Image 1: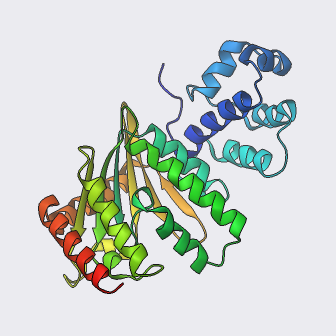
Image 2 (image 1 turned 90 degrees about the horizontal axis):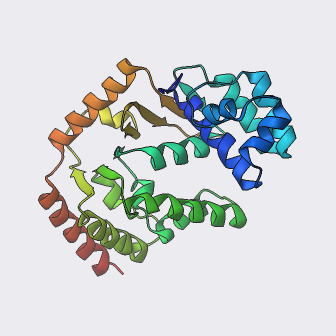
Image 3 (image 1 turned 120 degrees about the vertical axis):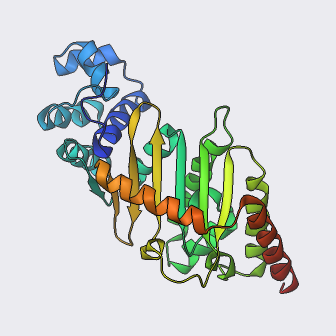
Length: 278
């Protein structure tokens, strides 16, 4: 059975419904009985093979005891589930985790910062500190980011193609020690067979990638989804024409990027400069 919709909000809704039920240790049949539906129907909702109505979804949080922000997030997902694209704010992390875990391949372009999947804890913490985020919230975000990175080292790891702007290596995030450790981590990750780290040199003139960072998630047997980030929200794009545009930009950036070997050499040189400044 193929999904009724492979849009970003629909995929995220299916995952959230299953995770919230399982987190409360409520059986599929038990919840289906309370909803007055067949277990098979609830199962296809949770697998994303069929989209429930907004009214059907609204009953689930109450039966599971889901309240507050989580309840509102589920309702928001249900309202947007039939849309091809999804502008997410409070639910962005849920979508991000869903697509990262389910992707077979990820292409990421980051012109000014190290991509989140390749950041060290200290690098992430330095960003949080500079953003005036409360300590407890910063701790939570660092933990989540480390958990996200496990997709690169699990038994069947995601293939990551990271295109990074040279300026990301020159920015002083935190202090030289943090940047030196971050560069060492990039070199270590680049040795993994499922990870490619390529640097796009600075000073090469205009290219579309200067507009901002993005990620492309590719799935086995399902259309890709593109993430375009801004400060306040994330846009998850699913329409084929939009994704094709970002794929073309990624191909252009790949043509401008140094090879894997030349990128490792540049990283080694950057590491030596950072060590010298500590």
